[in-house]
Length: 98
Image (cartoon, rainbow, N blue to C red):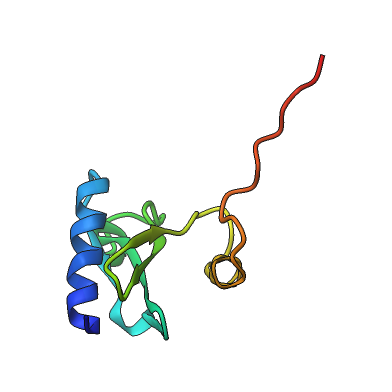
């Protein structure tokens, strides 16, 4: 798989999970030995039709075609670090004990 194929996979994934039109920002793509990390943003924000970003995010497409959505509550570089370290991208849920 090459970058262009991975970008198409990422765009299809994002389109299927978002109600709004989003755009991948190719100038922000991060290439790794295992795949590509794509940055995306709400098209209305990029065109200046809204003042606040709505759908800012990052998605990894591994060279195998597997897609990993990075959480939005941590910076992308922390998500990459956790992924590369084999750590969970999502913290364990806190449970209440009686």
